[in-house]
Length: 204
Image (cartoon, rainbow, N blue to C red; front, side, top):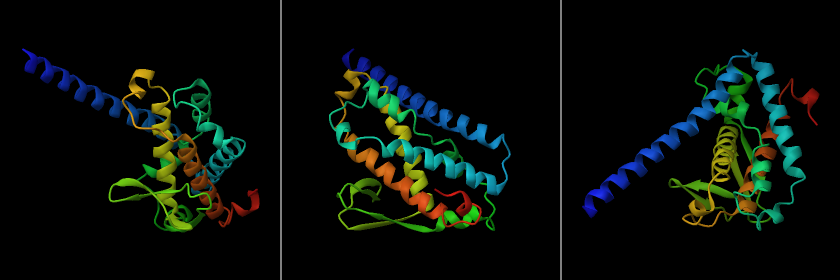
């Protein structure tokens, strides 16, 4: 009887995890489709993403990252902050399979950008897992950085809705580090966008 109960509980957890994952991607795809439905030109697509990045940087620039180290991820304060970080246009780029190889956007995605690791807060991706980066300068291409900002922001959004009991089962969530990594990627992406004709004229 005990074994049967355990099997049922395990199956329920697996089904629940699968449903949560589907809900996660459904929410992203809904936002992607809203952008696609606007049928923006390639140039306006880049401009839309530029303003998404700039708005996120303006928001994160006024956040006292050190204060985040004292907040639980599911606090109303942090939930309100992370819900204001926009990833709609960035997600559309990550999930797009129709980018013209001759376009400015396609060329942009392969460009490598530079991030200074002055506070030793940067993370990178090695052997399938996140790892702390020990070097002074981290280079990533723009597509990697966009993917990072979309995935990491969406994960923090999900975690911000966990109950206290659910959070008790998780490892420590280093909010200061996580938000710093997202902000540094946005900053690097903006620097590469600023180099593009059509963006240079509106860059700030």
